[in-house]
Each structure stands twice: as C-alpha cells, then as structure tokens.
Length: 393
Image (cartoon, rainbow, N blue to C red; front, side, top):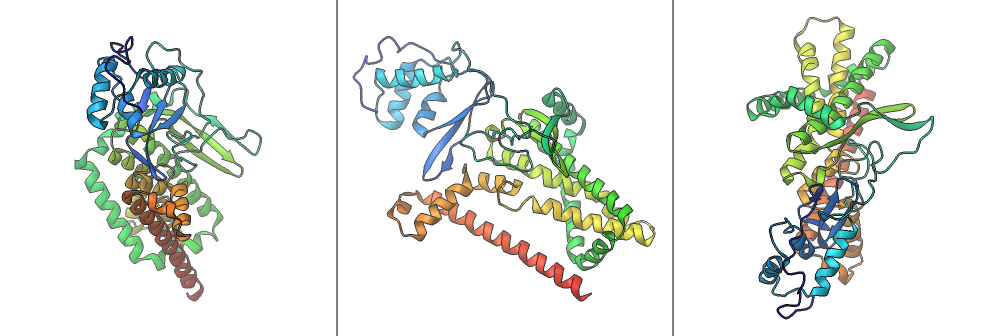
C-alpha cells in the first residue's frame, strides 16, 4: 500500500461506507503462518478471509466514519496512507460481494442440511457433532430432512424454557454432580465393563439402552444450539441426517465462529458433551440407590459407562469432534489440523520456511500436535485396559 499525498482520495473522502447488518467479522485467527479474519455474509452464506490491515479498515465501516477519517486512523496505526486506487479496490471488492449497505446482495447459497456452525471455505469446520460441511448426497441410503420450519425460533423457545440452567448458581452444582458421577464411573469401571458385556447378551435391554443413547445425541445437538442462542448465535436448521443404518440429529449453528468471545465459542462446543453427561445423572442415581432387579441394575450400569464414553469421546481434539473445535479456539486458529500438519512437515525437513512462522503459531501447532497424540494414546490405553479386564474376569 503506497503512500498518497493529501487529497488523493478526492471524491471519496466524505463517503461513509456501512456494512450491511448481515455481515459478520471474526476475531483474529491463525491460518498457517498468517493471521487472518473471517468475514461472512449470513444472507448469502458466503465467507472469505482477509488480513489484519483489511480487517482494520472494514471493521470501521459503520456508516459514521468517512473514508478520510478511517484513512487517518489507518495512517496512525500503520504509518502509511491509502491512495485512491487502493480505496477503490477495497470498495469495489466489498460492493461486488454485496457487503455494503446499498449494494445489491449476491444470491443466497443455502448451506447443506447438517452444515457445521459457520462451516464455509476458510474456517476448517469439517463434519461432526454440529453437522457436516456442504450438502450431503441424496438417495435412499443417505440424505437428510428438516424437522422444523424455523429452527432459530424453535431454539429461541427452547432457550426461554431451559436457559435458566445456564445461570452459574445452577450450572456450577450440576457440573459438580457430573464430576462426582464420572469419579464413580472411573472408580467402578471394572464392574461397569462387566455390566456392559452382560447388556449385549440381552436384546431387549440393549435396545432400550441404545434408544436412550440416541436420545442423548439429539439433546447433545440441541444443547449446542441453545448455548449458541444464549450468546446471540442463530440456528439455521434442525433435522435428521442418515447414512443407513445410522440416523442422527443435526443442529446447524450458523454463526459459531462469529460469537462474541472465544470463551463463548468454547462453551458452545462443550455444551453437547456436558448435555450427554447431565442426561446420565438420574440413571446414575437409580443405579446407585434404587432397589432394582439384577438385570435392570446391570443395564443402567452399562448405560452409565457407554454414555460417559460417548460424551468424553466427543472431546478428543481431532476433527470432526467437538474437542477439535475447542482446541481450535484455545489455539486461536482456523483449519488447525491442516496448519499443524503443514508446519510439522516443514519443521521435520528443517525447511527454513518453518522459521517464518511467528512464535505464537509455532507454540500453538506444537501444543495441538502434542495434545492430539496424548489423547490418542489415552484412548488406546483405555481400550487395551478394558479388553484385558474383560478377558481376565
């Protein structure tokens, strides 16, 4: 961006550009060695990446500041002025994409049913608990169907009904109960493994447990939507998706990456697993304290173990799981897995390009790689220990 003498933006200086209300801007995020911001038009569904300097300018297009005023702020921040050609280039780009008030909006591109929240080119959303990127193939063996006409209104009603549970005075005791329950599961894991083996020999009780676990996954998806709604997010779709013989529910949070803070995004991603564990609390109480026959007692114990595994598995920091979204937010990165892989390959070859990564990027990618390896090692160790216990009992 070359310096320009005063008056170089003549004819544009008093123009006060304003982004359309549907346009969302993300926080700064790592993408490879670069720092980027995502910009999304919720009307069309399109999104793209810009650098920090472009974001600096676009974020100030609020209809109150003139280009001259924005230019002065830019000059103070970066020590350079934009010339008229550069301003015209930026405004042309925003106008062509329909992001400025008064410019025609581009045609809407509806997300495929099951699209993960904010899943657009550049955010590395992938597929998983929130849904899947892109439009799934149709057919007898695979497809999807919406369950409600207005998913955002439905989620808003759910939030009004149960949102009080997100108040710290209620949420903290519930989380304490969840931690106590998981401590019981860990201490009595051997007993619960035997109950699980017995469950698979009883088709009636197995069907009942499977139905409850499926219902838990539906609540998992709705929890993502309710927590996102709590923080100002919007839910585009709620529906069913199938890859026969598997049928699952999905909930599309349309602006996940654009929620107000990193902590809000982490809570939204964490909500599904927490909901799975909260769902198990009454069954845990029955298993521990209710006078039940042996078969029912064992079935509840198996449900407790399987449900805990289901919830905790979603927190493994690998795409497309919720744990990967949490790791991405902790690292402040988009397309974290791909960026980590690219950096590690460069570092392993001692490529000088690895040194071009800023220190915080190198730290984030190394930390993510280590956490993923440790998580996989933990899963493998747990599977081996469970198998050994079942074979020796």
